[in-house]
Amino acid sequence: MKILVVSDNHREEEILTEIVQKFDDKVDLMIHCGDSELAPDKEPMSDFEVVKGNNDYGSSYPNELVVNDCQERLYVTHGHLQRVNFSLTPLMLTGQEKGASIVCYGHTHQLGVVYDHQMLIINPGSISFPRGEYAKLGGTFAIIDAQPEWFIVDYYNRQMKVVSNLHCEFSRQK
Image (cartoon, rainbow, N blue to C red; front, top):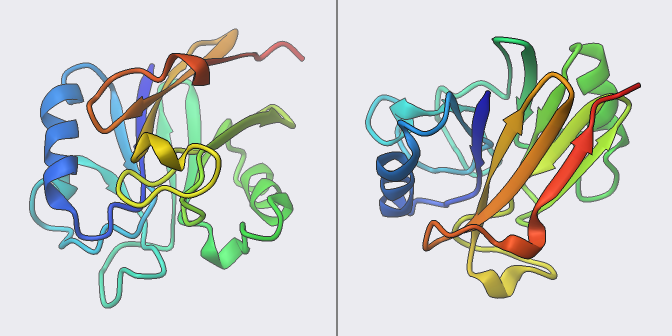
C-alpha cells in the first residue's frame, strides 16, 4: 500500500493540484496533515483525507482522523493540540491508544520520520514553508510504501523528484 502525506501548504493551491495530478493514480491514499487554508468541498482538497490545522479557521475538517485502509490503521492530526514542537510523546501515546501502525502529523514544518513502538511516525515537512535542516529543499512531501514486513519512506521536493538522501527503510519485525 502506498500513502502520500503532505502538510502545511498555507493557501498554496497549485502545488497540491500538481501533486494530485502526478500521484493520484500511483498511490492508494492521500493524507493532508492540516494548515491547507483551503475549502474542504473543492479540489484539490476533496482528493485528500484532511485534518484541521491551527490556521484552518472556521473549516469543517476534524482535528484528528483514524483511517483504516487494508492492513494499516493511520492516526492523522496536525500536531498543535499534541504540542509536537516540544515532544512527540503525547502524539505517540495517542497513536498507541488509537491502535495506529502509522501516525501522520505536520505543524512544525520540519520533515522527520521514526519507527518506534511498532508505529511509523512521520511528518512530511511543509510543502510551501519548510523549516529546519532541510528547508533549503524548498518544500517536501512523503510517500510511504507500507508492506507487512517493512516501511519504505521517500521524501519528494516541489519538483516531484525523490530526495535520495532522505530515503528510509524500517523493518516491522518485533
